[in-house]
Image (cartoon, rainbow over all chains, first blue to last red; front, side):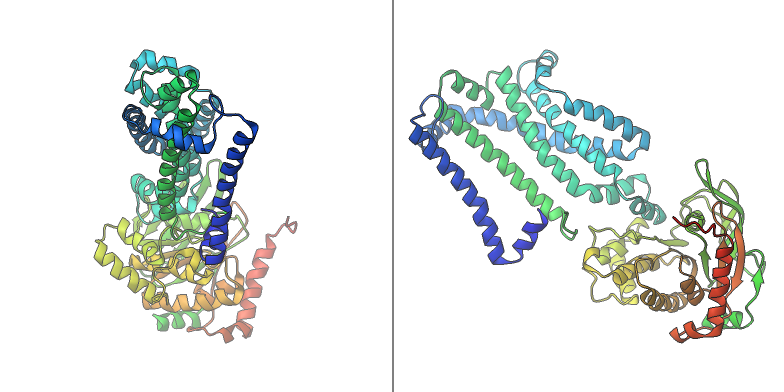
Amino acid sequence: MTAISVRAAGRPREAAAVQLVRWGTVAALVAAWEAVTRLSGAGGDYLTSPSRIVADGLPKVLEGDSLTLVGYTTYRFLVAFPVTAVAGPAIGLLLGRLNKHVYLGGRDVVSVLYALPMAPLYPLFVLWLGLGDGSEIAFGVIHGIIPVILMTMTAGAAVEPAVLDSGRAMGAGRLRRLLFLVVPACLPDIIGALKIGAALSLLGVLLAELMISVDGVGTFISTQITNHGAAALDAMVLVVCIGALAVNALLSAIEKRASRGRPDRP
Amino acid sequence: MAGQREERAVAGGVREAAGVRETGPLRVAARDLTLAYGDTTAATGLTFDVRPGEFVSLIGPSGCGKSSALRAVGGLLAPVSGDLLVDGTPVDGPRPRDVAFVFQDLALYPWRSAVRNVEIALQFAGVGRGERRARALDALQAVGLGDVPHRFPHQLSGGMRQRVAIARALVSDASILLLDEPFAALDELSRLKIGEQLVTLLEEHGKTVLFVTHSLSEAAYLSDRIIVMTPRPATIKEVIEVPLPRPREPQVLRTPEFHALTDRLSALLLEDDPGDVR
């Protein structure tokens, strides 16, 4: 949460103005989209309007077979993201706090991995783990975990030395300093990293399903592209976006709670 | 305790070439300490004592190794050579039961309320939840913050944050307090006022204090003895016994004895000043 939104939230009129701008922007974009598709005569197979997505596309997505595909993807994401959320910060904080050389060397390696395009590597996952859940979940994990490691190791390395020294002076060993001081000190950064990690884990699962898969949302999208089913395709994208926003909202709520009492960040 | 201090101070004005007086039990005894960070020597040949109930200040140029000496006594920096004893036992690491530390930037945890910042010292000591909350509230009460236990550090003034840090040091019942410029963020008058309140509080709790400061007037106003250090690598230049009676009131700041003392401290520091502050 930004400083502006926190302050605005404390004053009802300003909070209402922020909400008006936020939702007004979304409404304006949707209205412009609707107007362009109607006025240009575009539509049908390639570009469709929001009203057609809701009227024609959504029913196709919400029917039994399609929902089963959504279920497959949801299951894969719900396995991949928790692995990312636990292993990412654990590895990141370990690399960030073990010692200076591990941090500097590790940061270089993880930065290079972050810069690499992952998609061409997916066939290797299929070779190693076979077609199906295993390779798709693993690809979701690898897609999400690298930025989480990078961000949390940076946060871990940046913990004020005085915070750790004070813990030592109070008799806390390494593990207690990690759990009671480093993790809470880095918590807003960890949750910020997980918000990005969640989006990228989902992207990894979807990419895997789009590239080599027989089920899941990716396969549905791939089929709709082949069949020129723009309304159903866009409706499925809408469902995915709603799911991603729900996860993001959940993490934002956790972030807000974790940031309770802390000064606003600039 | 105050009586003892006054007696000592009346008989004081003694200047010693080294910070050692071999009488009675010693809380801290440092003998020929050399302190270093890697290849950089921070201090060498440090020999000084701190007696029970004493308030001893370390002053010297910036970066001369005052804080390093404090960290060594606190067990956070292992000496390269020399002997360092706390209550007669060699220091081989932090000893939170005996020694509490207040850091220069206070090291309060922004994610914890005032009471939980104080409580954590007891949490690390293995004290149960109920007892540590009660003791933390008592400690906050003792420093005058009994009415704001649930405020977070950023919701407190600089002086209040400093008191929370003092409360955290007091709550563990350690007999020795190491204070590393705890009032650095305060203006001169506030630091003297809070400092005097601190001295009174520490006397009530029977604490021994080793105090690092840059402020000559703060050192003169609060201390029983002042250890003057040379530039890095620090050695002890002189130890001065403060000839001012206790309890001290702000009026003491205008006395000739106080001015003579701060002039003396200033002259000692200027002797080693290269004169090209950048």
